Image (cartoon, rainbow, N blue to C red; front, side, top):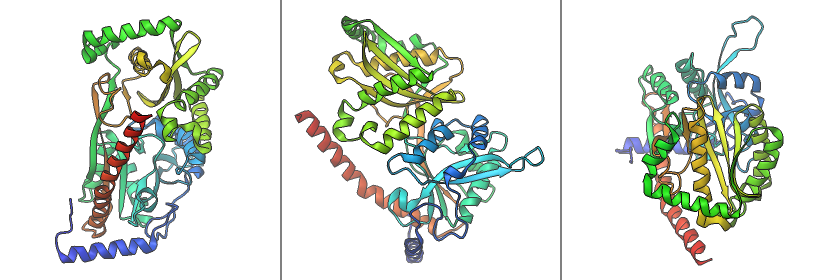
Length: 414
């Protein structure tokens, strides 16, 4: 894990870290004292951005303009983001250049609180940060994004939460290879996904087995004692307004509220999700699914769409109905809904690896990782960046586990 193997390399690393510490720019508009500041994300033409997203080589519902601009406007600790962009001349004279690549970025200081000369993909309030690359010029777009990062003074580009076998990552790999470079995986894991091309009932039977399905049907029948069980899909503005309120109330009624992480508990986050869901739904890229027992909503979730993929953003449940597994019941209905939609090939759970609810139901696995993209050959800054991130992970992981243990202990005692 530690790549600095001799005194010369160690000295280079110290110089790199010292230089970056002096020059780190917390706003993310430049990296390591850049002479070419990056544009702010909210200055990018939304129309050009939409045209790029319509022709993207790999979907990412979290980097659609309707979603990411709302995040950038008000979401807690996620505002004031910059952008790497790639463009080509328009086909029609006097038109603006055509956008072929876009990646929202922040500085490593802001992402990790480390003075490293690197740019990092911005957190779009979802665990997916796949850059948008035009399918007709993906390799060129990847190369241009890297060049813009170099021009901004960065020595590396860190792509967080990217499908490591996806088309976008392959484009970056090819662009790097042309310069004699290759990407470095910093960490990776597998998370649940749904193969929506399959028959839903066959998929659920294979995943859960007859015994578990029978138990879930029993729970659903008991839930029906409280009223007819109804699954609804909100897409129209009036439906979105109603069901977004339901979702925010449910999400803020359980353990997320006790931890202080529910969207409705932060003014900026609440403003972000209201704007993002309305704007995305208006363009057909977002819906809210809700499960009712009679007049009572017992579970609700926000689902994003982009091209042939959907993304399971967040789930809220009424814990008063916990013995009926409302979150699981909603996910079963969502599975049927997505498998019946010919426009959707896969659903990304965007969940943590080993998630106890979604992993047993959606048995597909999507390899996700953080990838370091070196921008120059034989650059002594790159080993220093890897070392800094590795040491940070060594320090943070025990602390993360301790916090998780304390939370679980408190929840079992309450």
